[in-house]
Length: 73
Image 1 (cartoon, rainbow, N blue to C red):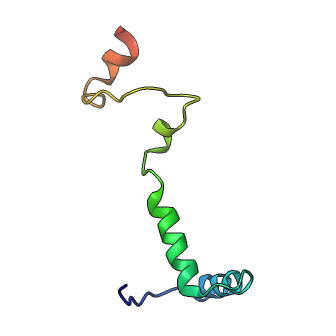
Image 2 (image 1 turned 135 degrees about the horizontal axis):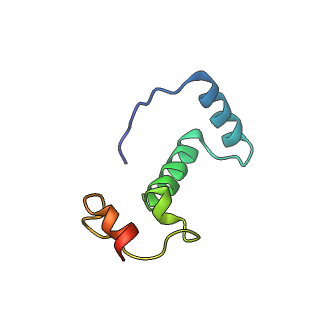
């Protein structure tokens, strides 16, 4: 494990310390768990992750030929 120093706004540190105190875990453990959770999520554009509006692969030339995809097909 590597030691790392981070800068936190006062309000964020106070909220994190309060949350860490409730389930009796350390602030470091809370930060590690939060980072693991955040880094485990898939980093997609919100439009493409919303399956109510979009399902499928994105064409590689979509930005260049968007009119063809919208109006010609």
